[in-house]
Amino acid sequence: MDFITDFFKSVNGIVWGAPMLVAILGTGIFLTIGLKFVPIRKIGAGFKLLWQGRTAEGEGDISAFNALMTSLAATIGTGNIAGVATAIFIGGPGALFWMWCTALVGMATKYAEAVCAVHYRETDERGMHVGGPMYYIKNGLSSKWTWLGTVFAIFGAIAGFGIGNTVQANSVAAVLHSNFNIPIWLTGLVLMVLVGAVLIGGIKRISSIAAKLVPVMAIAYIIAGVIFILLNLPALPGAILQIIESAFTPVAAQGGFAGAAVWAAIQFGVARGIFSNEAGLGSAPIAHAAAKTNSPVKQGLVAMLGTFIDTLILCSITGLVIVISGAWTSGETGAALSSLAFASSLPGGNYVVAIALSVFAFTTILGWSYYGERCVEYLFGVRSIIGFRVLWILAVPIGAMAQLDFIWLMADTLNALMALPNLIALLLLSPVVFKLTKDYFQKLESK
Image 1 (tube, one colour):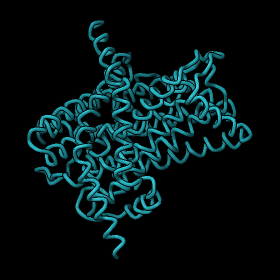
Image 2 (image 1 turned 45 degrees about the vertical axis):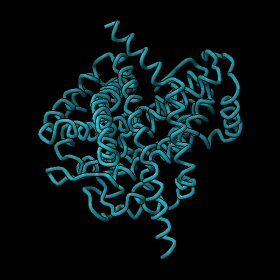
Image 3 (image 1 turned 60 degrees about the horizontal axis):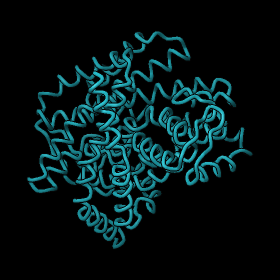
Image 4 (image 1 turned 90 degrees about the vertical axis):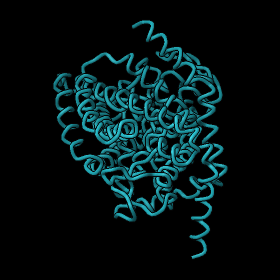
């Protein structure tokens, strides 16, 4: 086991090293420029389409709104609370700045992913719309690239059991046990039953639950964060200045903080940002491929909001609370650091974090179940879906009760390996994305 762990540590150091971070940021920058900054310029149009997307339009299985909520269900999870805290604990306040940068260019990546997903999606033998990197690699590139889609599906199917299942269940069990003294085994059992009840209904039930839970919990968490910031408003300018300065200058050791070089801020800011918003991983377009829409570009404009909401709003709330409170020098990390920060000014703030993390993690399990299901279907066909759902449900209580140091490591490694084939496909298909975007807006302007 030590050999396997050491192997994954070595691979992880490579795949999350400078080349991968450059590849992710570089792809985002290239797409942003190639799209003439459409994802940033058209944020307002995206929100307008999201509101209109509550009602179905065109072919597909779920509304554009529900597709985004399913995507957000999968992306809004432990990364928004524990991931941000870990990035700041290791990289200092400047890590939040690099998370912002990752999100700004990641919006273009997420936009391109969704455009390709809708443009190259298929209808399976059940009449369901399926898509994602494996499909836009198969249908958009020549046959010599088909193996790359298979590689993505393999990594996605396996990684889902880590990032999207056991890791989330373990986080819920730990935070509920520490804050409410709920037995870990009981949390695992209840989660298993709830996940099983939702999965029976497939994507329509998953998207329906996500459309209800995600907005309510996200808004509640934002309100709690805004109240905290308002209570500490005089400290806000100093915190923002500290975040920007720390992004470009080393941070000295202080209190329980060990100190951090600029490279640590960049590395962990980008890595945790990608872990949180998943721009470039290729997971979100699997959900957007099921949207009822008559335009890939429209769904792309909706999809890019996922990165905006996840990182530029929710992660910013967590990060600002941690920096303003000064808790980042306490020596705590992960969800415990976020809890300590909120509780410093909000009575019961630790409970806010506990409940938010629990709901976010639960919806992540639901969203990623769909991603994994589509990857398995691509590899083995529709008949494999039932078996996958059974394994997925059984993995929940195991994850809640197990020690997951190795699972965290493996999931983190496989996430990066998922990104590689997806980034290659996005770069090769970028001319298609640029053309579809140009044609859409020219047509819109001519009306």
